[in-house]
Length: 178
Image 1: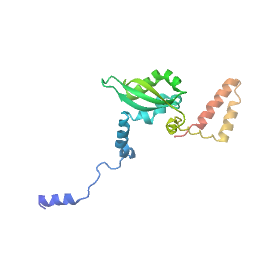
Image 2: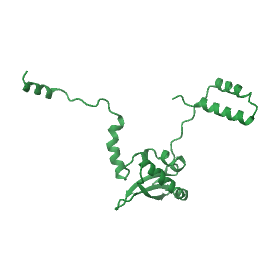
Image 3: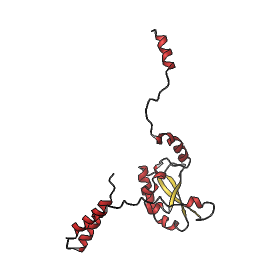
Image 4: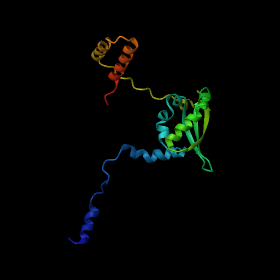
């Protein structure tokens, strides 16, 4: 075959993906990044893992809304949304929240936190829902194993030690087997 014929064969071949299988998250990553960057969120984990970053108690009373960057570039301002009753408690926790958010970024990205209050009812009612998803219930241990645990622990003389070991044993029995 001449070199010209090989070229025509290559152009007729179907186009193939070079990477093979792609992760599902890769398909939505660009559109998700564009949507979050409009609100100033460079670090998407701040939105997706908010309860893990600030803690369950804080996440249940507020949520991040916007990150604004100053003109001089000396740190950003994080805006949190909460209702009026929780604002004083949230105000007291601002240094702790700033520290945890900056740990998420890996540097002192947030210099200020602004708290925005909204009414619990009205047009913004759907936006003030701060409750996180309920945790999955622990699986119940096998009753035969619990009975065996109770018989093993019954020989211990100290009540406090017996109850502590029984509680430890029940926790071990209910631990998931991942």
